Image 1 (cartoon, one colour):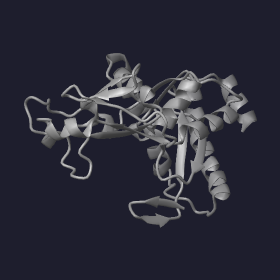
Image 2 (cartoon, one colour):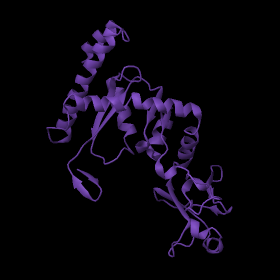
Image 3 (cartoon, rainbow, N blue to C red):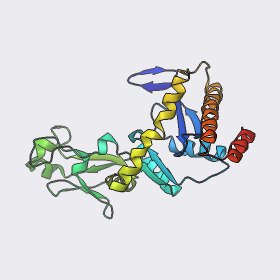
Image 4 (spheres, one colour):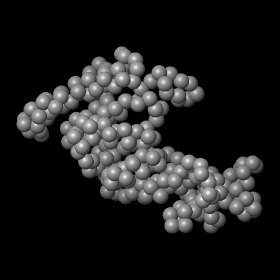
Length: 257
């Protein structure tokens, strides 16, 4: 059962990993999580099982996968990942000097060595190293914030006079991915995602599959496996006919199926 937008319903989150050459689904799994923030690890397990442990070279994902746990997973597996920056991490369109907008997280510089955020006024936001919470809270000095000329832009909260930024223990990975995705090379690689991962879902729907007919995760997983197999057979036939894949590879794939 997935909880989303204030209500619960029996739903399934179907995940696929697609190769960049022929849109062949090389890994798939089904979860009941309402979002994708913890789906990289199970996706890797599914991919390893389907490809006999083949390693991932490059992997692009949309901003729904931008989370500390997912970033830590690709880092731990030494994957060259390209994950679109989450909306909460994106810089504002207007600069601070030319607008009266509210401050966003990107306005605060992160010092990875000192593990502190620095606000536009130069004040440090520090975290409690003794805290055992999974989430980390970086807080500014309340007294300084009360007198800050940027207070109206930074925080109108009467309960919390000092600005607080909440994140997790993987902030360094977040910052590194944000910086990486600003480069021209990363943007070019991620741009290809729209012709790699997105089309298979549309093609599966166009084939007539609009929803699961079974109930229970085990049965749904089996149903989705069949759906992905049908998709792949079409892709193998097309690739073989255009000679973008060798006939020997097609025979091996049929044996594996």
